[in-house]
Amino acid sequence: MFWEIGANVGMYSLYAALRPNVQVLAFEPGAASYWALNRNIELNGMDDRITALPATLCVDTKIDKLNMANTDPGGSKHGFGVMVDQLDNVIGVRFRQGGIGFSLDDLVRLFSLPLPTHLKIDVDGLEPDILRGGRNMLLAPTVRSVIVEIEGSEARSRELTALMADAGFVPRPTPKGSPGYRNVVFDKLQKGA
View 1 (tube, rainbow, N blue to C red):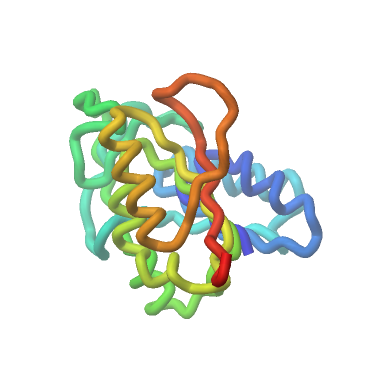
View 2 (view 1 turned 60 degrees about the vertical axis):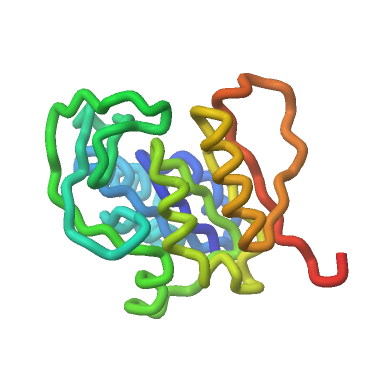
């Protein structure tokens, strides 16, 4: 079970679903990107393996505004209930879309969703809040790896790494690249390791 949080138009979801034994939950709150995500699922005949949900993941369950810098499919630099992005820049809001946000723990509890074995979190700045709202889910032994976009300040990078460590995850070594922008894979520490 793979969860893609911040699915955008579904690139990770589509690749994951190429394996016939993988089921995917793809979360994308932006209306145009959500439409494109579903269209890509349809065009690739993957609706039996990918379920797209138009929900935001956040620290606690609430109704708020998705402050959008861009409303085109594939747009980014949005913030749910916040006015700054992951680089601490003020979002140049083009549109404020209403939405429903859930903490990961509430989402699992309310809808009895199957826990992921792997998940990806790329949401332009809300990664720490999502991790805080999913503490119980992350502690579940079934969750084996998480890929998190770590972009921005060194303090933000340390915060994300500490949140993952508190949930029992360690980062894989990363290849050389831009120190301010990277996706980091965290693996669950095995008991006795």
